[in-house]
Image 1 (cartoon, rainbow over the protein chains, first blue to last red):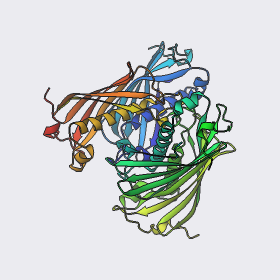
Image 2 (cartoon, rainbow over the protein chains, first blue to last red):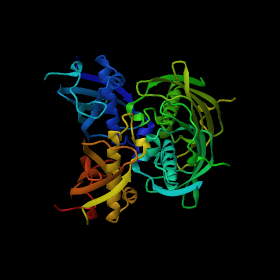
Image 3 (cartoon, rainbow over the protein chains, first blue to last red):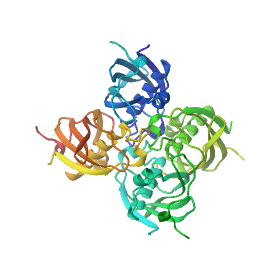
Amino acid sequence: MSRDYQFSLEVRYYETDAQGVVHHANYFKYFEIARVEHLRTIGHEYAELERDGVLLVVNKIACTYRLPARFGDTLRISIHTKRARGARIDHEYQVHRDGDLLAEGTSTIACIDREGHVQRLPEYLLIDA
Amino acid sequence: MSRDYQFSLEVRYYETDAQGVVHHANYFKYFEIARVEHLRTIGHEYAELERDGVLLVVNKIACTYRLPARFGDTLRISIHTKRARGARIDHEYQVHRDGDLLAEGTSTIACIDREGHVQRLPEYLLIDA
Amino acid sequence: MSRDYQFSLEVRYYETDAQGVVHHANYFKYFEIARVEHLRTIGHEYAELERDGVLLVVNKIACTYRLPARFGDTLRISIHTKRARGARIDHEYQVHRDGDLLAEGTSTIACIDREGHVQRLPEYLLIDA
Amino acid sequence: MSRDYQFSLEVRYYETDAQGVVHHANYFKYFEIARVEHLRTIGHEYAELERDGVLLVVNKIACTYRLPARFGDTLRISIHTKRARGARIDHEYQVHRDGDLLAEGTSTIACIDREGHVQRLPEYLLIDA
């Protein structure tokens, strides 16, 4: 199972704010897309996980912003799975435009069931590192 | 039961876009707040309606924009219930800043149950007009 | 110049609401993406138009919802330019999932300059119909 | 100048996602509201700061989530200014519902000018701590 995934996305007009740049809260949406797309590349649809009672929720998340992104930019989003053990997954993210690092982030995702109780990750999501 | 309700809200920074004005899609969020707040003034919490299996969904909605709103603006939102009969409610909306009409809209809301089937509005929401 | 364009997009988790479906306001974001992508297929980047002082703003927009979209759905967005004359463009939109029509919309876009004054559309955007 | 401010806000339907709870990215919007409202209580409108060429941008931000918030909840948002020195302000945030701590966050805000260059905070925003 690959720990890393990269893909491109385009900044949408509705993601910008009155400073003319992508509003900082939208990077957390980019990170969410990254988790979903990464999961897909290793053979799993998050929609199916939820139907099977495997809910992944954000326990903590952070982002540091270095350079602003603008409408019209194509961004390169990278996600790295640092650890997936017990009931949690730790990810790292980077957002580049051409050679420039615009932002980088980290998150811890918890696995819960439909009642909101923490449960172990399914075997196929574990990474022993 | 009053058909009309007005309240003020402030434009939030994250509602603006790179043109420096409130992104047009956010007016539909203002209209949603208006429906929820209006419902409250006539004694009902929408969260409770949903718990009782009464779901209100947007069937159609429209907005015409006359003047832009900006961060820092205080907007006056007006909602008028034109009709509430059978399984649908028709609303009209206006958005003012001081004396100026910035936008106006209309919507038709449908009442459905948890399975998504259309159901009659509860008695207390009907307006015979 | 082609009046029509179609493309696919995926419903993102952050676009859903507590009813488990795409929040109705997000269809207006899909329509915006459609306008930007359509413009690109006819050789223009909206980011460049704005740099040239050609701003396109929504004058009115509407959507009718027939069936809900859910996280995991791939949607087919169609845009049709009905008319582009003087200072305005009229578009029509459809949202399909497989064979099903989920939603359809219309909009009128106005062309303004940086000061917010209405200006004629650039020649290359006109459609004489 | 007070370093602390608290206020209440209501969860909006459009802030929820398909898990039935407030989407995690929206807490960063609550924090933004907190900064704007706090600034107001000490006598400054952020809209005016921007007109004066004083732009505050998020340099880094983080949130830890303990319990989910739902539509219908009234949340108590607390903001604490830890430090405001040179060109940066450090804030801490808490989100409560009744007695329960739902989430807590931190951010570092940088002061820049219209060209994006870092500039010292205006005197009236400094806190020597």
